[in-house]
Image (cartoon, rainbow, N blue to C red; front, side, top):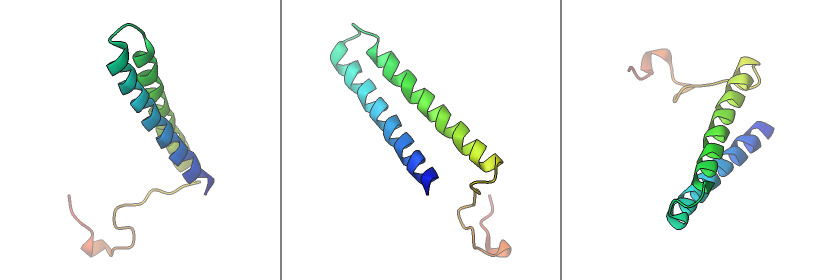
Length: 79
């Protein structure tokens, strides 16, 4: 359960950083580096979330599943 909370807070942080980057882009008119800083935070949070999830999968704390985790093998969609 705590992993879901961490993921939700990371998504909220990513969206907030993206929104602040847009706000600074529109209002600063290129006079400051706040847009760059906000978008750098967004990229950092996104990479940190990805690494966090990969580490949790590697340690076996969470298990990835497909779109149809309970579907029989013969009925699984082909790609």
